[in-house]
Image (cartoon, rainbow, N blue to C red; front, side):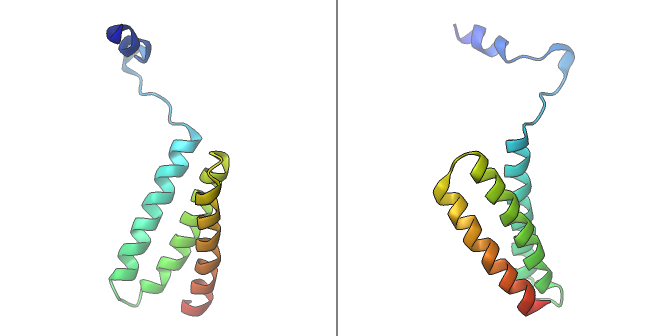
Length: 92
């Protein structure tokens, strides 16, 4: 039974499985947030540029969570989005 399930997910000719839009949104949003956090933590003249990255991350993760019907997470990303707009106006 386990072997059957494993083989059911196998792809022909070693082709990589296609990434879903949800997976791309999830990873892209997380990666942008981490790069933004690194920029902010660096305390350099470039630190303010973390906010546009945070904004993009929040927008992407808001979209991801709305599609996934994660109401609480979507609400949190909406709050982060508003905070990031304030950061953009105050820092840049």
